[in-house]
Image (tube, rainbow over the protein chains, first blue to last red):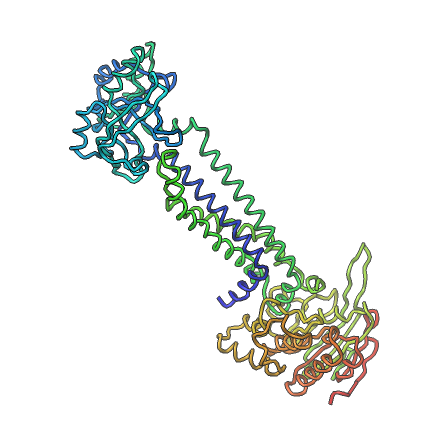
Length: 381
Length: 241
């Protein structure tokens, strides 16, 4: 600790340079935290997926439908506990930017298959009796300031187009903070009634629960075998695999984020390393004097590492800024992405990355200072 | 008593024997010091004079453990330093040598107090003990009222006095001064020389000083001339009152 005044004084030697270097750290760490948040948001579907749930889609692609008539055949396969089906509605509320996902659901079985979504019984019963009823996730309800009883118009270009109106009968909450509370559920019967004849009896995908998750591979194989060589072959996979596949449709998010993160940190390494190298070059004669009066090579290396680490630690203000900014950005992007949550793991990882970059950027300048010959350094006055 | 014939007794504070220092530049070997011997007793004030390139600073660097000779030996207060490892030599310098440079070489971002305190950071003294030593050193050089000033707020003479305080604060065995008045006006230079004389006389400090300034050399008890790496004469100046 007795060396701190020396480290501190050297840090403040060039205040603007110090500020810019700390700023580089802060911006890089903020970006790191935000990339982590986006990655988590994309992966959340897989992480919260039920272990006992399987998703069945058309083998060709998810935009191809599957007959509703498959339901009874699937239910007969041993190990299948319950089943429900969904369609993508794809509508727009008022204008394009107000995106949130709307699903046509099978009200009778929805709560058996998705027990993590809670709706008050009285609201659910109203919904069941109301063919134009809708249930919405708490985040979407809060986003638009809706209340129970509101009439919600949704325009769609699918299913013959036009404007559909729904009565807001209920709101659902997730058991887990990570559960998606942005969805808008509408009744299958009402949907089936209004869509063109050619599209009737077709659903987007099935979700089923199994008695024993260990049986999932067998059940998935049985289901796909059942519809092999039919006009609508199926692809059955666990919900987490389905969620991961869904994310992949956006591109290799993980690769993208790792690449951007690596570039950011490598650039930061160069910026900080260069700053430290310039700083050391500027005071070669001072380092030589310190060595002359008895400071060891290790102490000199320690000073350089100390300065770099202080910059890195203060740069962690970028992580604090992310803690404040992520919820704000999350609200601004509501509906575009699932809830944006800055996890403690991301914060710890960011802190560790800052320390590693702090040390790495000081190593070369530090070794150069350490190996400086006193007589050479004194000549550079 | 200063001797250059290599026949000094074992009680000398500094004993240099048969020193050679050679550098290789562009494939050519340059002999900076040749077969140099020197004995300096505790409390001596010795000035080295000579033309540029005669090896004065090289000799000071060797005696201060900043460089190693090509041949020969140096013993200071019983420690043979020529074969010490780099880390041992660093520790030895901290205990035995106080450096005073022509350009003062203070750390510009530290106050006078903090600059003087630097050598004490290498000791086990407590903070309050360090403060006492620093205040004493700054009082000796007459700058007790400038402790919290930064080097840029001091005149050249005052900066050099802070450098002298830094050199003496850890009570080293001897002081090495490399042209301590070379960057000062006459008045400031005289003040510094007076201070060095006082340190020698009143505090029994051993001082080895390189200088081009005949007035500075007159302050020393002995003046040694170096020419092409050889100590060619020893003069007892005797003007050190």
